[in-house]
Length: 226
Image 1 (tube, rainbow, N blue to C red):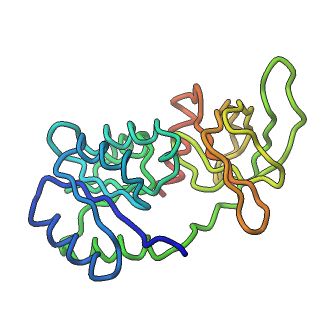
Image 2 (cartoon, helix red, strand yellow):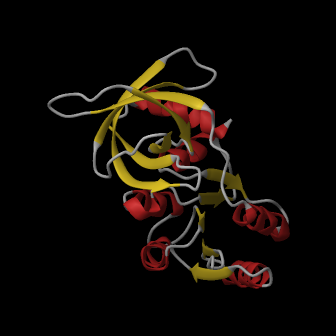
Image 3 (cartoon, rainbow, N blue to C red):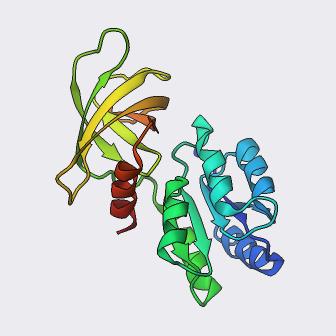
């Protein structure tokens, strides 16, 4: 039996937390709340929510810093994380996306609009992966044979690599792919944080990029935020 979906919402406005909690619990979604980024990080590590919503401006630790810390935990490498902000300038958006958030959202005028977005994301059982081909091989003293997979959940810090053959957790991969809409090939090494297999036999490897150049990261961030 599948456990009910859960969400973690972090915001320093108690009224927003109360409204969000009431809205989502009324739809069968378990909710954990935090009033600062440090508490959100603690709850995310212990409760493992299916969705994390972080306000950017919070005391102790802001949303971008909390997101970056969460992404360092293999268990949260690809948990959907939304960062919301009262303003949406390019520098703010880029900082949040580079921290590894799945989406950046400017707070809508009506709280109900934002809550509807949360409920919609939680109702989607699996995000459709982009059909972006990725050539990869296992690194090491002797490089393994090249394989071709697909990328899903691409971010400025990593990707979900979909492949037809097993991939070892903890292995280093040499990755090569072209971000849609560009002509430049990105070559980067990544470390496999976790591996799952779906009912159709496809392996999904959560891969963290290692040493990604700022130029390549900016290309990915621009594509994700488009």
